[in-house]
Amino acid sequence: MAHDDKDDSGLPVVWPFTLGAVLIVVGLVWFQIGFAFEDVGRALWQHYGVFWFGIVVGLALIIGGGIWNTLQGRRRRAALQ
Image (cartoon, rainbow, N blue to C red; front, side):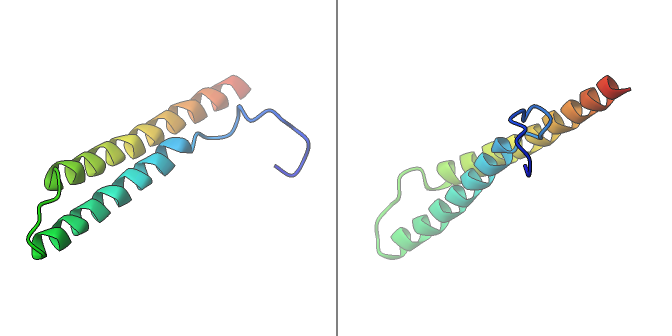
């Protein structure tokens, strides 16, 4: 913030979105590396499992973070009235 207010309780939570995006990117990279390993005749451990885990958990974190921020915003607006 632009001033010296150290109270960040009114700010939205951003870590679920960041962690969700990182998990999705790691899942996609693992998916591509799995095919690269397959092209040279080797197998990558849990090729599809890590991919789907990253996608599903990442999306769950993003959706959960959106719901949490929506509920927090509604509570904050109700407290101001």
